[in-house]
Image 1: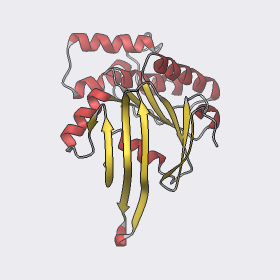
Image 2: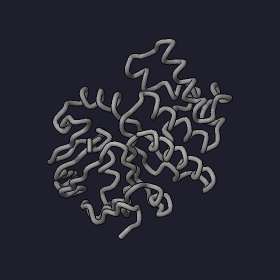
Image 3: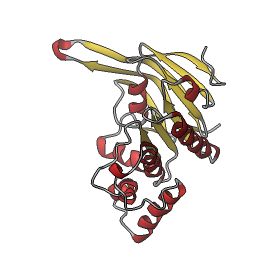
Image 4: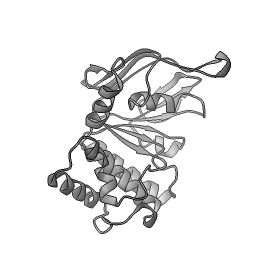
Length: 232
């Protein structure tokens, strides 16, 4: 089976004031096949967010390999990592990370803008993405004019506009009520059914159970792995 992403013996150390070393990841190895839907769970400080940041090329491992789309990206410079993020990855954050001054369409357009794609076709694609997530009548609205669920839909459209291979979701339902969270999970499930690889951090057991499998992190190591989504 073709791998969308893979980490091999990954370590991540942070050096604090006074030379104190915090070992956030300690030898993590995981395969993420194409079309996978994985939930990562763990208490605060377990390493799950650090792992997601490494998978998103937002941080670098201290040691180990990260293979993304068949390429070892662990030694790439910042410019190369930025290019990888723009063409291979989509991000969905708990806090939405929308820019308050921009409209729905302009927020969705950001990944394309950073790629230098400001064509009329790109703009039309952003409008189509907004329509796909049910915001066709909110194109000129700004984030403060939207509900939490609508803001998360903008974030999902933004994550998809560059047609990424892998979607990284950090607590995508964490700020939403249960009904809106259900709508977002249905969207993620539909994206996965269409072939997208989804790697999701969550602290909610019922949300994790929607994934194909669940990983549990503890103290920087991979503690359990359940192919059914049930924790062991």
